[in-house]
Amino acid sequence: MQIKVWKIAFCNLKGGVGKTTLSVQFARWLALHGKKVLLIDADCQGNASSTLIPESTGIEGQTFATLGIRCTKAAELFSDKCGSVIPYKTEAAIDIIPSEVADVDLVRCSFESMEASLNVASNVSKVENEYDYVIFDCPPSLGTAVAGPLLASDRLIVPVVLGGNFQESIRSIRAAVDAIRSSTPKLKLLGYVVNNLPRNSPLDEKLFENVKDWLGEDVFPTCIHNRLTTLRAGQLKKPVFGFLNKKASRELTEFFDSIMDRLGESRLGLPEVTKEEK
Ligand SMILES: Nc1ncnc2c1ncn2[C@@H]1O[C@H](COP(=O)(O)OP(=O)(O)O)[C@@H](O)[C@H]1O
Ligand SMILES: [Mg+2]
Image 1 (cartoon, rainbow, N blue to C red):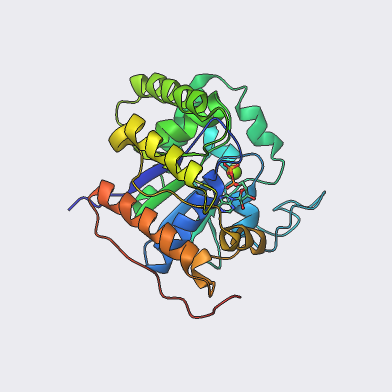
Image 2: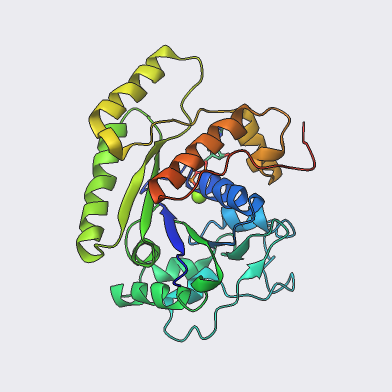
């Protein structure tokens, strides 16, 4: 029997829309439900890596090598000389192929030829069968650095924030996704997800309704509100699900279960956590 691994990219040409927050919390949610998850931090800011590897603080001069962390780094996936791929096992029961904070090797990948981006898929395929889910946290850029992860993925989630020019932003990412999909027909859009919507704001709720009218099925039916718990979880490098205030976990769980719906997988619900954070 063939075991299906879902390879899902969280991508937008913009920064600050929640790619890292949502991809990391999704990875945590899956891991808390006992799924085997590999997270690939394809962003040279290394935010997902410093979140999941607590000993790496991102301070100047500190590298995975100086911390004694030996694993394959995301930049190496772009090379045809990568050899065996060795993910790092984090305490959160998520394996990660990390990037350093300010990872110049990954920056250099943006200037590689497009052929280099194909190496990401072949290098990830060396380990993907050990996992139920491979999740890519993509960089806010175009070119080889994002083409690699997208060519290696089979599903795409696009977090968006309804700022002043969100229509232009969504149209741009749509055009980019269409262009990429013409080379990778297997990459299917799971949906746009509206993140960071201000709470208690009828005007913003109306904007969200307009986006649903505009994008139809392409947008996830639930949005994710701006919540202090989500921000705190990011700052403290913790899962949202362990916080006493359950509003953020319920909302994210609803979103993550709607991802499962779209994948044709069973819903998993709120994960159980042993330790609660205030
Ligand atoms: N739903 C949310 N509620 C509160 N803060 C959020 C939410 N989503 C993202 N953030 C915060 O917004 C900032 C940018 O999010 P991030 O996930 O790093 O975006 P990206 O990876 O797209 O650049 C981070 O400080 C994050 O903690
Ligand atoms: Mg990010």
